[in-house]
Structures are given as structure tokens and as C-alpha cells.
Length: 85
Ligand SMILES: [Zn+2]
Image (cartoon, rainbow, N blue to C red):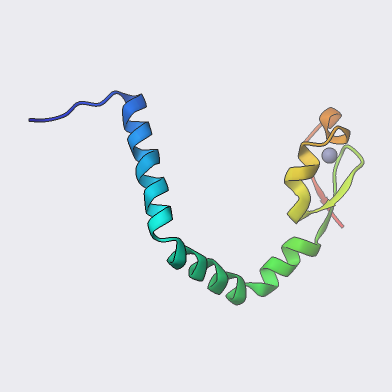
């Protein structure tokens, strides 16, 4: 017998499976991320220290882009072209 699921039910099942998988493999994921950050330290440092000038007039580091894009200052930003400084 084949069970037919609606798209919503399939999405719910998939998300539940992914959550369980992440919970069950938490240690492996943590070790992998730690190793990746060690291997790519230069990339991480560049991400944390590269300053960007936004068309809205604001400045931020790449690590803080998400926070800047949610700020009041950035709300009136005319375009999304960035200038690396
Ligand atoms: Zn901005």
C-alpha cells in the first residue's frame, strides 16, 4: 500500500526528519564546523574584518551585513551594490 501525502504533510515530515537528524548528529556537526573554521581561518578572518560601504551611506563588516540590512538606516537604500573598502 502506498501512502500519498499532501505537499504540506511532506514538508512537515521532512522538517521533522531534518531536526531529528541534526539532533542525533550534533557532535559530528560541531566537530566538522570546528575543523572547517580551523582549516579556513584566513577566510573567516577576512569575513570578520572586511569593511563594506553600503549605498545607503552606512559601513559594516561582512559579518554584520545581516544586521545592517535590517537597520532603519538601510531601509531607504536605493540599490544593493556594495563597495569594498
Ligand atoms: Zn545600507
